[in-house]
Structure formats: structure tokens, C-alpha cells
Image (cartoon, rainbow, N blue to C red; front, side, top):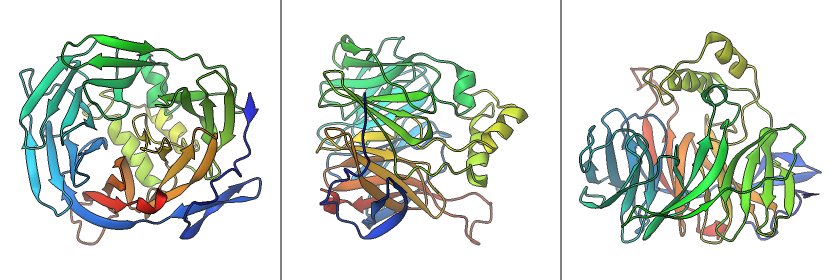
Length: 367
């Protein structure tokens, strides 16, 4: 096992500003891209978003109405569809969205174990039921004739609620959309250690191998041939949760929240006094078309949020991309990054609830 010097950062990264944080004396570089579109969307739980193949349309989940809402970057409504139920075009637990070919969007329904393909207008194209062992299925990459996702084969809800990781074991499932048959599974061995002791989520690399995020900002790169490299994110600060983090965790653990259970006062207090995980939840790590891994981090998430970019081939940190406001989820395709954010509270927010929006950014300079 190798521990990689994070100084291998990619010399051609276009840096507009320098961010705080360094490892082995290497400053982290941050790109501040141009925002090219924004539109307000309804309040919701979670932040799953899918960017369509036109790079202009994005779909988000409206959890309270059990719907998918698709908008374009000019602010026009493209389509709103879905409702609670078990019939075609209905949802039990609308868990994740993922983009596909020809401007289509796929929906992952965790309760019904169903993957459905729609046009952004709401026209239903195809649907299939995926296997029950694919629990909490998080899509990996865009879908085509098949869709693939990382699932927690086993998990411990107490560990999840405590913010201590997934509490389970990852597996990759690839399912044929036409037949519903599983055409590939992969349960990768992880033979690595990190100083803080906990390896969390795994993300399969389209080029082969896996990347794991671990405690205290450690990244574990497992090559296709089994070689393991560990590095610590130069941007990891070990910051404690702020009040917005604590309120969000408390809301998610209520009976109507994302986890459907409840967090004890002791568990919430432990969360308050424990440094935040480096990354957002599984599903907010994505590979771009150049094979680089983008990770939405928990750094700041107040006035600004940050996505860190890695080169798995060299097991190296490349740099950070800064966006405005509190990131909840993201997607990217080509030269376009799209993010779901909560705005900062302003005097105009009489209800005391931050507004939610989708922002488009031009990240062509990262290419």
C-alpha cells in the first residue's frame, strides 16, 4: 500500500483563487467558475439532481409532493410529473435521479425497487424492477441500455444516523432495463488501512478499480490490479458542524425525515461535537468524461461550497471548484456543472426557511 504525496496536483489546473488548506506545504487551488443560469425550485429533502444530455435541462426531486420537476437554465418549466402510489409513473420513495441518453431521466424508487425512464416532460419510456438485495441503490454514471448503482448489501441504521458512515458493505449491481436481469455484480475487496480507522463509501472507477472515501478526509484508491494508494484531502479541515448542519441532521432524523426514524438527544449532541465528514452522502461523488472524480465536500457550505477533483489514474488531488451557497447535490456533463443549493437566509425570507435553487456553471476551464 502506498501513501501518495498530495503535491501531485496537476500543474495545468487553472487557478483563479487560492483556498486555505495544505498538506506537506502544498497550497490547494480553487477554480471559481461562471454561473450561467439559475432557477428557484421547491423545498425538498435530499439533493439528487440529474443533468440532461442537452446540458440545459435539469431534473430534481420534490419530495413533499412526490414528484420530479424539470427546468431549464432560462427558468422555464419543462415538466412536472409523478405522484405517490404504486402504478406506472407513480413513486413509493423517490430516492435518486440519473441522466441518460436522448435527454431522458431515470428515477430510482427505493420502496418499489423500481427504475423508470422518463422524458423531462413526464412521458414514461420504460421501467424495470431491480433486485431486492440492491438496497439504497445509488446510480453510478449515466444509464443507457443498463443502469448501474452502488448498493449497501448490509447496513446498520444506528451507524448511519450517527453520521459515522454507511454501516454496511458496498456492492455494484448493473441491471438490464428491458429485462430487469442483473448482468453484472461486483463486491470489491478492500485491503487498506487509514490512520483514523474507518473506510466508508466506495465508488467504482469506470476505468477499473474503486475509490473509497474514509474518515478525516482520507481517500483510498484501489487500482484494477489491486494496488492501493491512500492520501488525505489537502482541503480537509476537521471543522465542527455549524448550526445549519445540526438543524439539517435533526430534520432528517425526524419521523417524516429522510431516515424515517429519530435521533436521540445524545446522538445529536455527539454529532454537534464531532468533526464533520469530509464528503456529503453517497451519491454526491461522480466521474467526469475525463475520468476524474468530483466529490461534494462538507467544507463551509454556508456562503460557499466546494467540490474537490481527483485524478484516480495518478491517485492525486487536482484542485477544488467553488460554488455559491449550500450545496445539496450536483451533476455534471461535458462543460456544465449543475448544483442544487440552499440560499443563505435573507430579510426577505419571512418564513425563516432558506430558498432552494438550481444553479448552472460553466466548468470548461477545468477541462
